[in-house]
Amino acid sequence: MAKTTHSDRLLKYFKEYGKITSLQAIQDLGNTRLSATIHTLRKREGYAIYTDMVEVSNRFGGTTQIAQYTIEKNPLTGELVKYNF
Image (cartoon, rainbow, N blue to C red; front, top):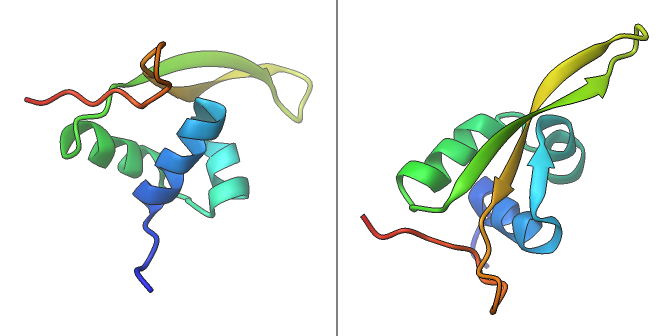
């Protein structure tokens, strides 16, 4: 059986949920280096993945900003958009 990579698991997650944060990647995918996987999918594979900074509450009662990654999907088919360079 072929080994499932971080990229494979992340693409499956994107298809189901459309967006992800580092904490979700650790909890749901076991991926502690989400930004590296995102870089691979963007630069090597050509996927249209965008970064938005979102404000969240922290454990000290304040707020902080984290990166939330979103992938572009074809609105008609739901397929993930991949650019051919």
